Amino acid sequence: MIEGLSHMTFVVRDLDRMERILTTVLDARRIYDSGDRTFSVSRERFFDIAGIWVATMEGDPLPDRTYNHVAFKMAPEEYDDRLRRIRSLGLDVREGRPRVAGEGQSIYFHDHDNHLFELHTGTLEDRLRRYRQG
Image 1 (cartoon, rainbow, N blue to C red):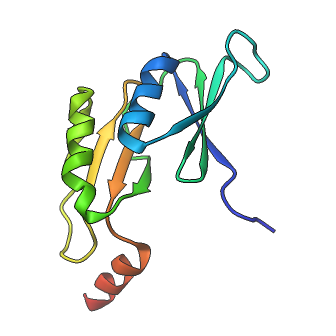
Image 2: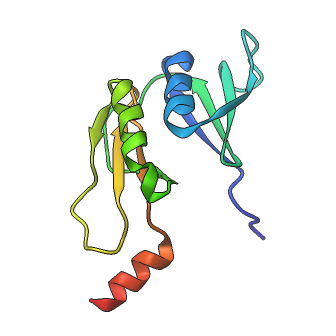
């Protein structure tokens, strides 16, 4: 039986640069740094983001940008502050896609390695309720 999400891993060229993104935008807390040791496939760092284990590993970036993404939940009143934090890092920001009213607000941004992140104010229940309305 699947018990939940174990962790997610992002392969990045620069561990320090990714750490700045995770700590500045997502309030990540670093919990491990392999330093020069390699227990897995490359140097790595582990973070806690709202109870989720997020790993970063050194390696080649994604070749292209796509809509594949990971979304983190934020409160609606955090929108402006999170947008400011993302922009302060010079990241490529897209303030959401066209949405119907009632499904929440989103901020999308790419990191330097073509990973797409979303900060979203809605819930699955909000979205399903809105979609059922037609």
